[in-house]
Amino acid sequence: MIPILATPFTDAGELDLPSLRRLTEWQLASGADGVAVFGMASEGFALTTDDRSRVLAEVRSAAGSAPVVAGVGATSTATALEQALAARDGGADALMVLPPYLVKPTGGQLADFYGEIAARSGIAVMVQDAPGATGVSMPEPLIVELSKLDGVTSVKVEAPPTAPKVGAVAAGVPEDFAVFGGQNALFCLEEYALGAVGTMPACEFTDLLAPVLADWAAGRAAEARAGHARLLPLIRFGMQPGLAWAVHKEVLVRRGLISSAAVRSPARPLDPRSRALLDAVMADLW
Image (cartoon, rainbow, N blue to C red; front, side):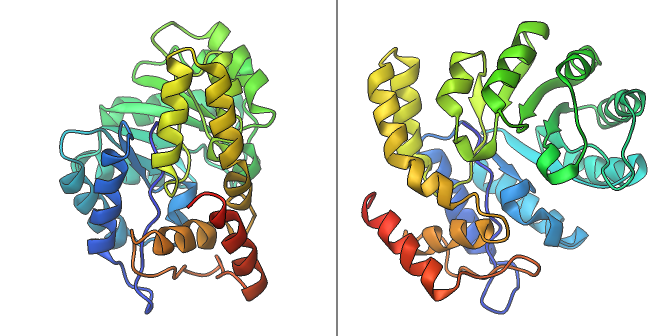
């Protein structure tokens, strides 16, 4: 389990590094195997170059020897390479790389893109298959071809329905190529059943998801499904377009892990009715 860290801001919209450190340390104490920054749940779209440098430095320091994955979400090979090299130099252990998406690439261009990022960065590259966010489709045979590139070591499958695609990809890639699920762990157990080796959800329920995954790994499928079912209302609530970032942060504030639920535009804060609905969801968990 590699949770995607939220990026805490102060009420004034500045980076809140003490909250970020507290959040990182809590992930690892709660059962995470590593952490990721600059993912979809991190508001990476709203971070400046300086923000990215400061966030990675703080998380790298707080994470100790645990793996740190840095997202790359630029819109060309040149700018993606710039982000990748900065992440490598900042101490990231691996890169989670979105395809270029403003100009939709061909399959051949994607192979060239991922091959160059992996070769030039020199650290492990994860392909992020997220057509809902990028509009870039990666069919299973293309991901299998990308898995053969030197330095491309994993994929995060977020193309619904995720479980069947996880199964198809896992059946075609080399044994040492890691297949992860995303989508806030919505179908993580089904993904594990079909060959996934990990999941990368948002970061506000790590302590509740860890025992679910432990039950699954130990063969206690019924217990795992029951535990996961209990989390589904919160998982669902945190997948609402436009509101997801505020949901993650509202939960984290109420759990005492960050100090403010502030988000940066175009993300938007929760309206009072949504906040009341979230209260009801949380009351069943804590």
